[in-house]
Length: 261
Image (cartoon, rainbow, N blue to C red; front, side):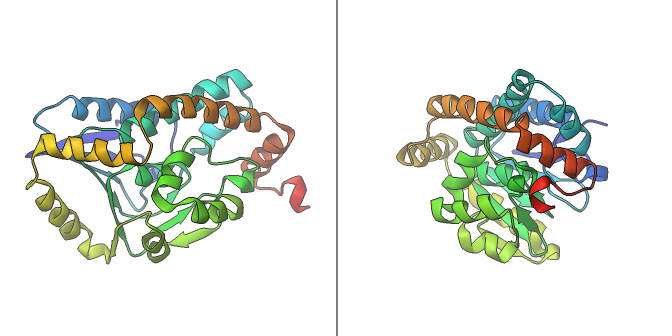
């Protein structure tokens, strides 16, 4: 089974992360497949809009345990290369030339929050939960940080980055991470309503409007490539640091890190 399913319904491309058995957690395959799918729909002139969602009960639970285990034992150089691949995924989604809609059907943690933040429009089911819990592992949400901060603002990000707390869909809506929260049974009609609005705009105008908004927010793809390189180096350094190794080992072994003993 592919890690990501790409289907087309008329002029809309639907990308579904397809690892429901691990709550659509990130591993090398999912990152590669989702990046490739984004590149494919970006280059397709027949696609007017893109919907991103997750199979099963969750949107995306962040990093896969086996993937994390491999990164915990990898070198700083390998960790940097790994982080750059995730950073490119986020950057490609952020600057995709078509309107993007996050269909948040369930939990979005870590990198899953980054995907939501990178989409132009985000609609969540009422039961969805969110968290940026990297500090609990002795890490930081490095490569997703520019996109999350752009979505929720510096003040909210400072709290969530340092507490790692779980928050619900209502709080996510209040802070601007998602635009709308609806009961689960109303999620699909809400997505269709937004897609109906998107079909009324000119595709060139929409592409330029997106570029305009990002540019006015001092965010360009070229500038973000440099930021991504710096943030990838940061998370790589933290993963191999004593505290990062301690936090990752405790998490993977279901124990307590040193700072909680």
